[in-house]
Amino acid sequence: MGGIKIKMADLKKEFETAGFTDVVTVLATGNVIFSSETLPDLSFLPVQSFIKTEQQVREIVKNNPFQPDENYHLYVFVAEKAFAQIAQSEFNSVKTGGEEGLVRSDSFYWQVPKEATLTTAFGRILGKKAYKDLFTSRNINTMERIIKKL
Image (cartoon, rainbow, N blue to C red; front, side, top):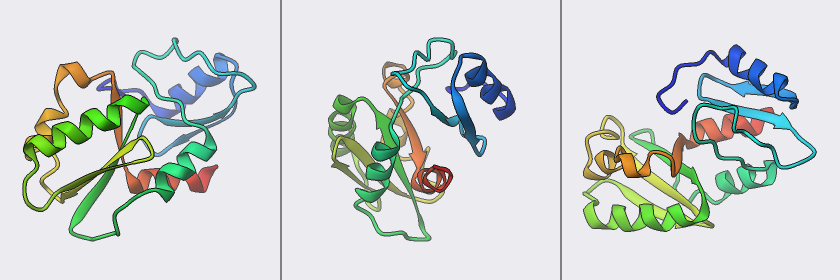
């Protein structure tokens, strides 16, 4: 989570201690599914967190503009609405052959050749400190696994 290592069992316990119910973690990704009657306060977490409803998660996967391709990774950026346009602008300024980036319904989707995620100019931009708390990226496969647990 945000460069901080935490066991998923410990993360689950933190959510339960904070009063959330039906807590489930997904893989070792820092993704947590939980129930709450009100908009949750996640200030107990040591990193910036992004909350999406079940419907929003389903929409993110549904709006994926790319077809699966075994030669590519597909990432979706989970962030506040404004970040999708920032990501698109940054992508357009440096994109190279073989990668694509598109905004769909306030989410930015990035398709990049396998083994190139961290080496493309756009991949390096994502590591800027200025963006650290503005977004998190997830492989679309992870998002699909989250849906299966909902």
